[in-house]
Length: 424
Length: 138
Image (cartoon, rainbow over all chains, first blue to last red; front, side, top):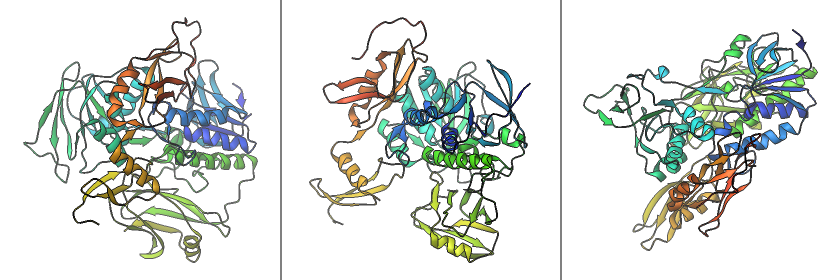
């Protein structure tokens, strides 16, 4: 089998991160290959037919397919090789990429650099240990989204949604618009887990009830779901006996979280972060393996696709520079960022504090709701080195902050290698 | 803040930030004070929400002779909230012929209200698909 060494940069995944990476790398003059397992570019966007995309990158509120279309037009205007229906099977730390498709069979590429842009997948029923029968009619929200929006099938008529994440609420509205009855959205937590705007425009607008601190106790039905039993939980998520309620339904939709998809990263020996469950990256989107970069939901779950595209652009430009051999030497001071109190995860996990005016952007996922003004602190040995203010902290909203000259000056004046980032 | 006024809380839908906007109204429903918004879109939003709430409707229509059975459509301009389900019922009866391109108008001036449904995705024509009709609609 011929080893194909024609490409400078191989991008694994043709979703928003991968497309932005390919565009940025091609604009730097790199020979770019996109490997995409689906039959079209765009990743999850073609099935996200709701609006809410593009506020940052296009200054407009666009539906997902149109956001993807705009990037696809840019990719196709550049000399980027796109292989659709192509599944990447293995990536090695030496940057061998093995893939397969129907037309060409088994393929072996040896690019100079790689951008990992595989995105994420949904948590399933097994991962939340949902009891009951294994009847038909239990779907993840993304599967329902694909069935309805791409394939044109309705999964059922009387629907209950478990999980108040954004996709769950959006699918509750979508199914209502298509004529189904959404009886209830259940949420285990005592608060909404998705954005409040989606509660207003997806649930309130269509009179869909939301039940907090409530979960599914039992799924009924042998061949097809015939109903569920719900139960309320206390503040420690223990079921409260006597609060059971039966709902007759034929479909249960699960919107219970997303997990970065990193089998290939692990195969390549990329170090993953315990908090994001994606590759540990620095401000150039470089992973622990030289020449392998990562961007988008594969590195941790983002709220907004606009930020995914921005990360993809950075990864693509840096992958092109690495392939050319012009990547800046890593001689500047590098510091690690570690989640402190009320912080669930941080991206990137390592930033450079240089003497130039480059300004790293960090993204924090709070793991607590604090509805009053908060301070984000960088601390070392319990001493605050720098801090900034935010209006509030909510788990459903990533805090995105580009460090200012003042923050960088304060970090330059300190010599620690690791900072705890906390929200107080 | 007016003592005799009523207040209402709205989550602004104009951007993903989702500001909680607090509006104080007098007895006749006139706006006395708006707070909590981080930009002027919040003021516009609340005024519209009080007088004539509108929403964008993203949905699908059927495609005949296409590589896929459905194409996504939306109302680039928000439509009165009370008409959303009516418009959704109308879109369920629409079938367009492939090919469909992003930006194609699928339904124009619905009920004479100036409401447009526009394709937000593309569907290529399936090779050998027969031509049937040009459009559906009410």
